[in-house]
Length: 386
Image (cartoon, rainbow, N blue to C red; front, side, top):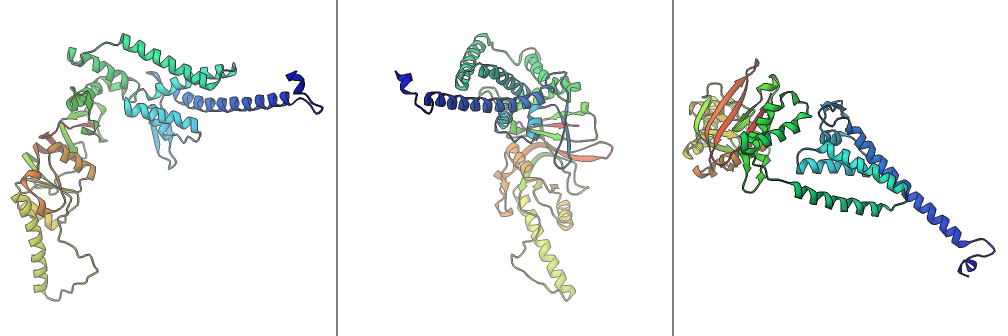
């Protein structure tokens, strides 16, 4: 009777509703398929860069800059992705990189393979939410199985053989795979030197990677300290400062400048001498503040002119200028010093301490860099990649 009641002289409303429902569902399935195809295309793009025989990708940026890499996170980061589901895969890769630091390609390829299988299930008429629930249950089973077969590994045993093998595996598919054993040892030493094994935590901010062209890859070395790509401001300053007490400054070595527009007329030699004497007094006062605090090395974020530089040399106070803000912060953290914005605020407690600060010269171009070693407060290390 219900079926007969649904029929009238103009047709069957029930059948019309059924057709509308079918069209709506078909449209939804097509949308899901389009999303899966977008994600699959991303996975296919980076699949060929996976594994020890993976090929490198050459990425050309909008400004014409060329990057050759087979790192999944880097490739996806440089890709101009518009589709919202494809963007989720890029975010997945970034999350893996931030959390684990490796496996960025593998996780995207795996996600693409799961979505490929989901396509077959959608074709069979299974609702996407049911498929998602199935994936979640499968994940729970997989995690339980991993916990069952997991075993504790002593990373210090056999000269850190287990962790060296893990680092070598991670480097095996990278561009630097030809020197993977040497770089694995450097990487392990760097991580273990800053790791807190009790808390199972590694502060990667204390590991600085400095690249310098003009050498061979095998000349890459681990330095137990901080490298600053600067040299001493005067060529005749000492190249080595032992038991360094550093004044870390963000104030420039120069007389204060009036904030308003000004004009100064100098008509006689006496006026010029007075001006010069005043300027010299400012420099001498600034150097005195540093000396009184007990510092034997000044590291400044800003530059200083030849006059100030010469006075620093005369006063036997080695100095480094134009040190970047990030490097300045790292030096302060590693040496236990405080960044001082005004000379008047300098005190012995605010000085950073290090065992040795030396100037390193290398390469045919005689490039110079400063190395700060035996830092008092921290185990900061630098990997110098050639």
